[in-house]
Image 1 (cartoon, helix red, strand yellow):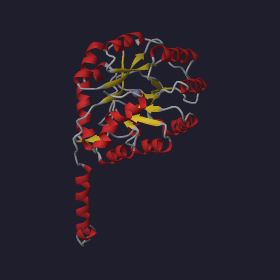
Image 2 (cartoon, helix red, strand yellow):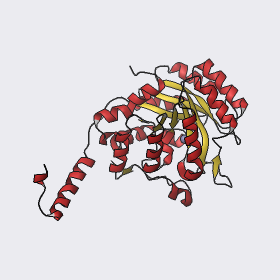
Image 3 (cartoon, rainbow, N blue to C red):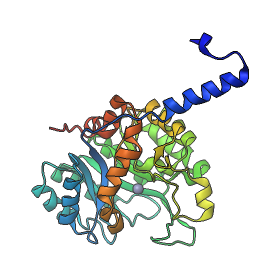
Image 4 (cartoon, rainbow, N blue to C red):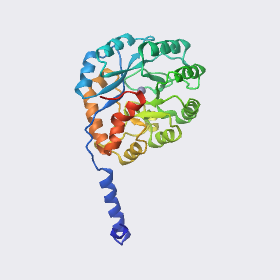
Amino acid sequence: MFKMIPASSKGSLIFLTIIFFITSFKTYSYDGPLFDAMAQIDETVNMKQAIKDVRNASISKIALFARSRKFLGENEKKLIKLQKKNKDLIILGAPKYFLHKKDISKKFTNHTLANVDKYNYAFIGEILFTHADKDHGRQHASGETYLDPSGEGHLNFLKSISRKKIPVMIHWEFYNWDRDFPKFSKIFSQFPEVTFIIPHMGFGSINQIDTILSSHPNVYMTISKSLKKNTSVSKEISLKIGEGMVENKVLKPDWKNLLVKYQNRFMFATDAHKKHRWKKYNKRVKHTRKQVLRFLPNDVAKKIAYKNAEKIYGIKLK
Ligand SMILES: [Zn+2]
């Protein structure tokens, strides 16, 4: 093989560069099923239409939870009704609550635990730990929504939930790494029996994602990260969060390597949540197929598209 490389070093460099580009941008043709491992919905979205859009995008299953922005349990019953009419499609998670203060309250824990049993929730919808203010959302003097993960209420919540054997989604954006990583890392180690899902890869960099996944086998991530760089945050935050995975509609080679390296730990998801994101549901699915999954070897694409989600949620596609 090496005999084929031209003798001059300049020649070998050109040869290797060509090989690198051919292998990096090689396309495959994943055309199989998709399990949307994470999406959320509230009263601002036309739920019936949203479900129609999910079916039109040829999604086989969707892990969905309600957004409770005003009070505990808001939209919970609506979503249960919706699931009853779409049992073949919707996997339900416990609602995401927006009004946590400093720590997880007993009230939240009791409410959530009771309903995990009552409604047979397959997972706990995102708990909001760190969230940088976005152009189009709530604004805070501190520039963020923050909940300390090492709070006693959170530890008690995890102790109780660990008995239920269902995954917990945590919304943690990695922009304040030095403050947050040690705390989360400690919790992941403290609760090895709990499966944690970090949606949208924490908007993190390759190094951050690699650091977490290499040290914590009980952590999974969804790839609902912006394909392009997130531009809806302040400049300061923007410098601290990772770049997009895609450039010129092509999955970047270093991101491809990461997806291949941790092929058992990533899941496809849309993270549809607000009205404008639900409107683009179909487009988002198409973009992920064309700009991400297409660049992965078929067995890797399959795992990320639905097989890992089947395992995590304990639900097989038919
Ligand atoms: Zn999130």
